[in-house]
Image (cartoon, rainbow, N blue to C red; front, side, top):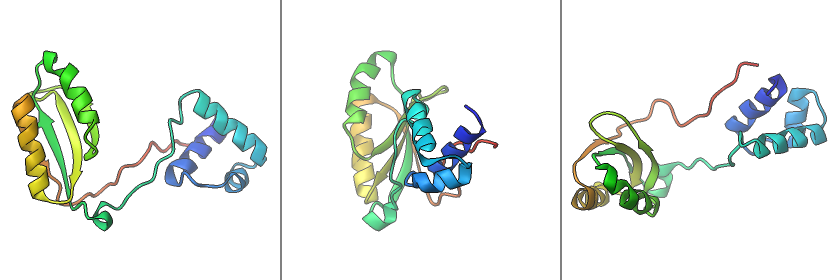
Length: 146
């Protein structure tokens, strides 16, 4: 990856809908050259996809939380498919420490969050939950030095 690829990635992470024309102007190369570089970055697996960032409050998902789950290794084969099927789970990561998984979730109400936590506890065991009051840094990508 060279400086032009890094500039393309920086711009696309800020706005995945940045036009080839805008990218071309910022990188001082032609639009077809930009398109070829993007295709190369996609083929190399550096660009995995393009996503929309939602305002959860605007769609009435007012409760965001992090739920940690303590799993036995034998439970993972049941846990992973189950968690992947729950649309409220925004992300789930296998972690070190006292808990083995941490999930970021969003729900319209605390009642719905509580129901989900109760289901997780019933099926898989111990949890610890932290409800988010505010977010000081929204999800962002890696900004490359150019």
